[in-house]
Length: 139
Image (cartoon, rainbow, N blue to C red):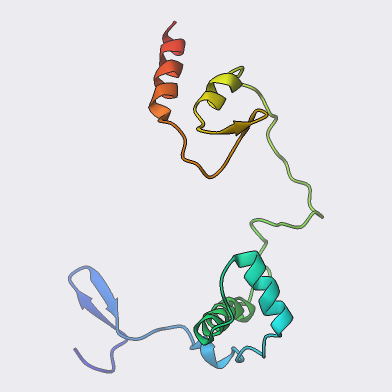
């Protein structure tokens, strides 16, 4: 294979020898110093220890990875989804297909309090409920 080729052809497959997109690491600045109060807040939210050198490096690496999104040119591209409340969301109508099985579902839990599941204990085997549901459908 010649070193100057951009791709090599093997049968019907093409293997690219080099990347065709620019190296975006030149466009991304190194992350600024992260304040201690922000690190504390992130620790509480993510339940991850960022106080060690390895934890801070992991956080900075995640920030650099997310900063790649700022380099992408999205002009003229309509967003596919939005978390903003300034758009009307067209949802389907809610329709109850089947119901009245709250007691059966609560019996599947190892622990309940006032008709609520208690987490994280593991639940019972779902195959019991599925077989009861299937026998109900055949009646």
